[in-house]
Length: 213
Image (tube, rainbow, N blue to C red; front, side, top):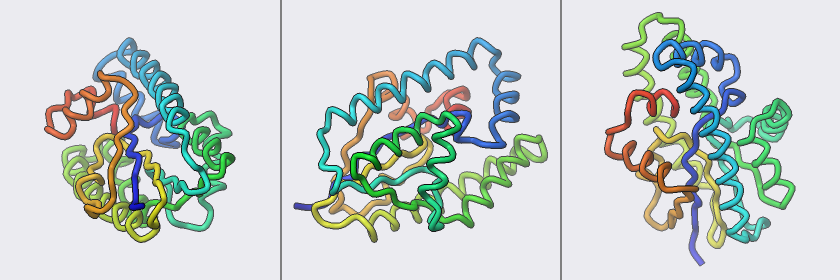
């Protein structure tokens, strides 16, 4: 039967970013202007509409589905975290709740210690306290997070099960998964697919990189 992982590259919403949302928004508007920001918000909304439609078309057996989420720590309070963010309007987490209600199992996905360290790094960079150092440091944390996520999936996804992984575009977990896990990329339209390809080739524009933190 094997193991399958539906790999969903995402762009984070303002709600997902919590207290970092406002400084990152200001930074983005300062660089690229309000029209670009408004385009970004529309892109995010279209993205989640497309993802939900594509998932619905998969006709998954939800009692055999495990859901893994970017930024969701292994902590014992995973469902409460998802509910809180969903109640704040986060479409990503609203979709997680929908999958859970259908019978899917929510999985803590990330090392909380790494998340806290990276959060502080991004917070400092957003406050312009050494943005260059923050960029290098974040790349290191991303690699460590990816290794943890890949190991977490390997240890918890059983034979015959399907995993659904929601993950920011800068991550490279797909390169760290064991070869017996079959990866099924869910990309909702061609322009977004091209953006993922650019990420893989390290050719993303500055705007795209700021959108996929």
